[in-house]
Length: 127
Image 1 (spheres, rainbow, N blue to C red):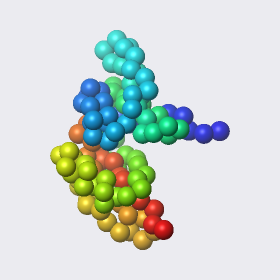
Image 2: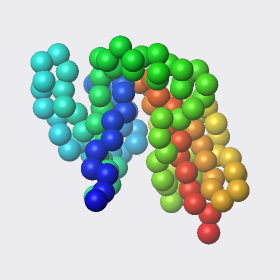
Image 3: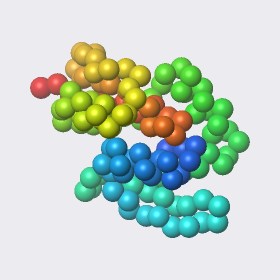
């Protein structure tokens, strides 16, 4: 068994698509119109778990994601091979970081704003 798809709740699906593909480099795996919204999934690489960019339609998602954002808690963690290089690349693309690369023991981490109501953590394992 493996995790196939995970959802990230976003304020705006098109802005999320632009960010996740244009800035993070993810590839679209599905973009299907579903009335007012879309079934919209992206993937960070071959064999990676799909991410569903879900609209914040359910009444619980807004308060929940707003609380995480206000408390500085990332929605999820994305693994990178070279955090400093990824931080420099994304900073060059005007991505906002709320935490610069930081050594926290066994990993290096940084936190960025996805422009759609979420913080994402980047992590590089040491050694």
